[in-house]
Image (tube, rainbow, N blue to C red):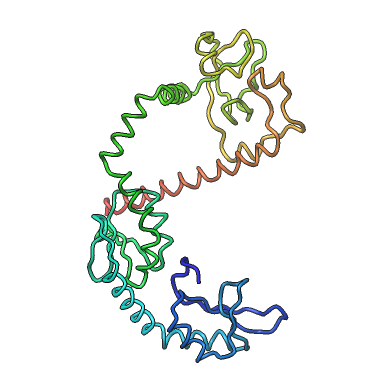
Length: 306
C-alpha cells in the first residue's frame, strides 16, 4: 500500500471484464491483511489500482461493515506496534516530542509541511502549534525524518539570517532587487514615434500590460540599457502601465501570428491566443485569491464589530 493512504477506503469498482465489485485500500499490515483475507477469501490484489478487489454486487456494503467492526482494533494494534518500534529505534531530535502521540514542532518550512503531509494520519494541531503523528505512522515518519530535520535546521532564525546576509553580499541579488524596484515604478519605455494603443492589452517584455499614460518624459539611456535592453528603439519615452484584469484579457483580440523581430525591438506587440490563455489563467487565480482575502477580512471586521 502507498504511504499516502491515510484510512480504510471502499469504492464501487468493476473488474477488467465488467463484473461488479469494490476495491479496498488501507495501510499495509500483515495481521490486517490476514484478517481481511479471512473475511473476503475471494479478494485479489490489483496492481493497477493499488488496492484489493472484492467481487460481488454488495461488496462495497460488506467492506464498509467490516471496516466499522474491525478498524478500531486494527488502529489500536498498529499504534502499539509503532510504540514498540519507537522504543527499539527511537528518533532523537529537538524537533520531536513524545506525548500520547508524536509531536513534531519546527520553525515554519514549506519542505517540512510537504514531507509531513506524506505521513499517514499526520495532522496539524493549532492548539499546540505542532504536527501530531500517531504511533501507527512511526515507520513512515522515520523514512521522512532526515528531510524533515534538515529542512527544520535550515529554517532556524540564525540560518535564515546567515542566508540573508549572504544574499545581500551577492552582486547578482543586488541587481535583482534593483530590477524589482524599477518594475515597481510601473513605467515602461516606448518609442516616441510608435506609441502603443492606450487602454488596450498589449504584450511587452514585462508581460501583458495596459498602457494608461504616456508622460513624454525622455528615458535615460543608462536606465534603458540596464533594465530594458530588449527595447531597441532610439527615442524612448516613459509610459505608465498596469496589469490587465481577467475581463480585459478575455476581451483582448489575439494576434494571428507570433511577433516579428521588429515588434520585439519596438518593445510592444499584440499577444497570441496561447499567451492570452496563460495570462487569463494567472489573472483569474490572482483575482480569486484577492476575493478570498477580502472575504476573510470582511468576516473578521464583522466579528470585531459584533
